[in-house]
Length: 157
Image (cartoon, rainbow, N blue to C red):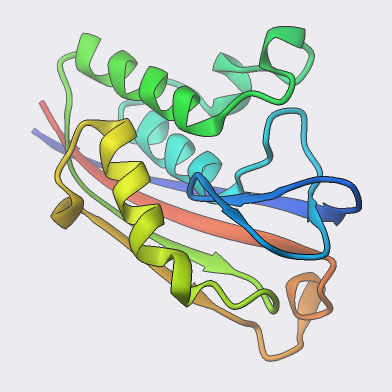
């Protein structure tokens, strides 16, 4: 039995924060605001995986009201999500994702993001795809107010 899940996340830019996307610390003048490390890409992937297995969402499992998740490494959260899936009898077939950001340019970091996500998920790098795009100056990402990400996951039981 195959199941598909979709995840979406967004974080606004904030000063005095690191910019972590796909587990990569990207040099930039601002980071993303969030309770954890605000890794928008990993959060979208977590939601896609949880959604595919009908296990709720990232907020259910790692609430921002719980201090133990303050500044949490989102790759660790992804590992926990993958264990939840495995415990429920699911395996990941593939993950496809898109990061939407006007700045900074993400292409130099995509291969490392793929490696990080594959390792945290316990799957082959060939099963992880990451794309980056801009919105041509439109919307909140185009106005450089934040970054958004979509994730899609195929799992099987």
